[in-house]
Image (tube, rainbow, N blue to C red; front, side, top):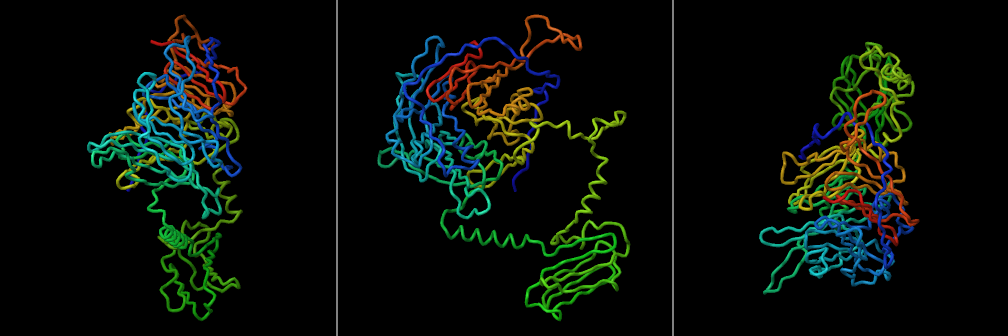
Length: 586
């Protein structure tokens, strides 16, 4: 059984007296570099029309930040070149330089996705060209043109096109291993009621094999998880022992891809569905209870036996075990109870209550095989009886200690498009879920790498704030640590309907978001004031202020990439790379 956990917030990191962000007009230095060639953007095809396609590929971040060497960003251009910009001094920016060129001609492929990069370690890179081929590259020390040399040590076709969700490099049993997580949105022929697609996460483990003095990398394991929604967050633990996923709908490991196992799964699912169908339906009024049971067509009146007693009922078809039998919730007038067979081949049983008025919460004590059906008049009665718990008047009785909830207090940004997501931790050996957290209304916002040796952090909305959580796979008692809070950011970002990307500085000094076109919003953490400032309403002195800054880019092209470091923001459009200086260096 998976352990049901909860996220433990640190009260010291919360600020209940936060007053909001003050719009600051201070100018931010913004530098721009014209690209030699346009970014290799791959637009969605006509057959990629679902919300999952938009989340996985339509909102893809084409700018890749090397968290091992900060202020190094990479992108892929339309010629298949991987370009790098390494920033040491803002005022002396060099043009992006080519560090690697994909061997395949991408323009020859119609059915392809965008190329994706993930930095597994300080010297290893996982790379996908978007056609279904995975490359493992030894890069040397990156960000330095003298020592950076990208060399392919593994490349293999792995089926349908994918993007890389995450990768890690580690040494286990003296063997160097790289684990890569591949994301696909695949057609699902069996899904006739949903979107017609399912999501797969393939966990590929590649290790160095020594054979007769020859060292080469080969695939050790390929494991597939399947779900019905694109995960918000998916990451492999640094040791390669587990996997963490935040998703709206659950994922599970597939035992095999052969048709027989799939057919068996379908049969089992059908059986479960049959078992789950109600055995009988029942309704009630103040005076009586009506039970409806579906019976086979070959059953006649002579085959049915119904026995009534003051506190129980028993229904038998032919010589089979009792279909229904047990103690009733309350006493009945057994001599007035009747049963008939309807033309639709259903058995209808009428029970006359001995005590009129009280509603029965269940029919047969302990029997969960039936389903209670409520008519509209009963629904309205129940809603009327609960009216005292709510009110459309703003605090009608202020003297009351606990005023009723008011629907007017909720705003549009408090509504979520989805039901609650969940955070699951899968064990790499047993392939079972070991920990589960129901995130409820804690909406997922973004992820960021704070320490490249740890798993990426994820940011969740908690009420109006945004809280940053650091997973610790090696600390079972403290697996998710609350490390930072961005005050009111959960509320603020909900009002930005055109937002495309969110990020924060690895030192938590600011959070930022960008819209699809031109505008970038920056939210700094509260900082002490150099001058004395007073609150006009309350007359008290204000010690610190949190600033909001807005930058408008001089570009008409849509934003394709967005990354944040402790000092600057990188914004990528089709033909331009912008650098926004947010913090001055130490």
